[in-house]
Image (cartoon, rainbow, N blue to C red; front, side, top):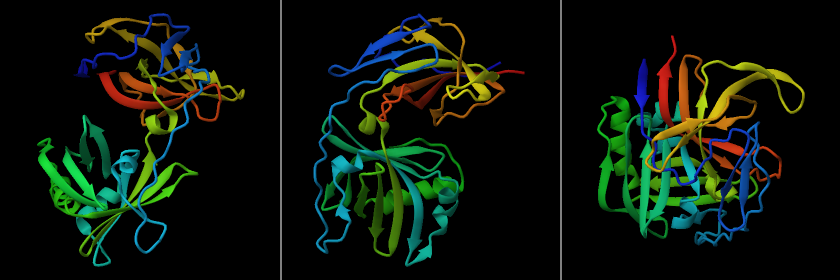
Length: 293
């Protein structure tokens, strides 16, 4: 029986029904192609220019947050205290790694969005020397999740008017953000967004079979592989066909395999920054799922 069925968003990259290979045009001279094992060829990405950010008056390693730098990372909540003591409303969220915060620019508007494992909420904001001020209307989904809902409501108050400072680790593509407001201090760990680090991806739709199969990886080791195939959609989001099944011995970041569910997922394939033959795959969203009894 089918649990969920979502019509995919219009596809921005045209995928062919050929299961052996495909090519997709990327920005400039980038060319990415998929072979039978899901490999993507090396592409040359343009060098990115990182704008400097304002240092704090005390000349410490921290800097005031700015729009551009905030938008480069996915932020995960790792600590929250009030007057030096753990803030209980956030402790389970931190333990379960459910606190997620993002920033983005949309047609000139600066936006924030967050979730603690239940609702999605956000709105527009502005910065002045790292201080956050909410502007315009906020939004939130309206699912009641007990303590999580209380934490979501509390965070909207805690973020508005807070001071954000950053420490950037360019070597590891990570950052640390400190959010402070009165006696409140929250710490966030930032991981650079794949599209910032690797460039524009190729968007794919894969069906994932509910059973894994025995296979041999590129290093000659025996293991269990995912069984996958390409699924094709037209510009209206209507399924038009699928390719042949094949074994996939790589990883899809953010995807959780379930042997009880047949799934069609949307994922992004990024060029591997180390020049290796296999790309970096990132799970984007579930398109269809069906329970297998």
